[in-house]
Image (cartoon, rainbow, N blue to C red; front, side):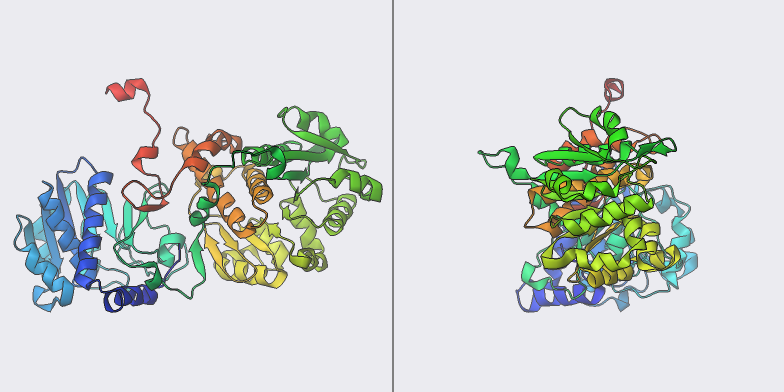
Length: 550
């Protein structure tokens, strides 16, 4: 799913009307039908609604939504912010049609007028149809007054297109400008940058959805080179062939771990390996320093192992690069996942760099592997020779070390940093964090919208490395889609897991039992909406029996 700027969205609407023959008023009718249907499904118990309308087309969407909610038996109050004589085009037509309904309609000409409608704050739902995609900050006048007014309400707020005050083209997570709060957001045709980057809702799990309203695919054009990572989920939606066997789904070679007198990290490669198996890889072998082997072997009987020669600190030794050993160790392997728990000693760094340079299979590099590469920048660009897929999965601190800049610089413009680094080094870069980015060497960037604060735990990155490697093993000819799908599924599994657990108590491995549900999930719900954020009601787990009885 492409991401469109505000100007590109306007051009799409215009092309839909001028070149494909769908009148703009019909686009508005379709949009309002989508809003009303979503409101009734998302807030099924509402008996009353207050709709705040601006004077533009966003307000027109709100007025037409009011008519449909009124027809559905909801008691609707419409507050128009401004003089109705100033309404133009489709918004003016929506106003004329609104006056034929049973809705309570009031015109707000000045700040004092809102004081006469305190009862409207007690509605079961407030719909924000004040400012839309064309808004340019700062907010002023009646919209700003209305923002202060609704703060006295405890009702959920549904934003049409965007929460009023959010710049559509903003790629930052938050804004310092005044914006309307939102508990759900519905937009149309395609997301704008703010829908994917912005923290538009009060809670991370509240819905942001896209509804199709009639624009054909040919009209949806963008030069932003941005898209939604969730679209790659379709890669794993086709059933496997009837004549499948393990040899058809790749062999992941996980290299990591350490175990010595100073401590160790044996769990990291184990989590990566199990994640790769759960993601569908045909075979997985974990290569770990020999002292860590008993611990790794105990995690899953399906997991194969390879003992690496270790140095005195219990980390992988460069002795493993002996040509005969190397050939035996990597025979039949199709994807390399290296770094989890590996350590960063001089010996281990030489082994890591040597293994990467001696192999030609696709590689996913994480954790200590990234920190080793940061110390050997001359190695990085050469790894992607001959079209080899190299995937790096840094968190912001690791990204800063790789790029030679500060973490603050990374976070200040994550999109530009990721895009530039991927292009310079010819790698697929997964920049982790809120709204993980997947930047490709030829320029496109995918934005992921799954995941939640419960994932801020050790081990989350190890699972991600495994699911990326597992999908690369199965779809070697589609590395871009495989990586995007893996990032989306990783966050989605955690979103599903946390619905039955508290955000504080969720462990990284608690997501593993939810991989199956994540693979089976379809972001396009039965009503046709695509869920960028949040989960549709039908994906909610059954309530315990005592709650169901209530």
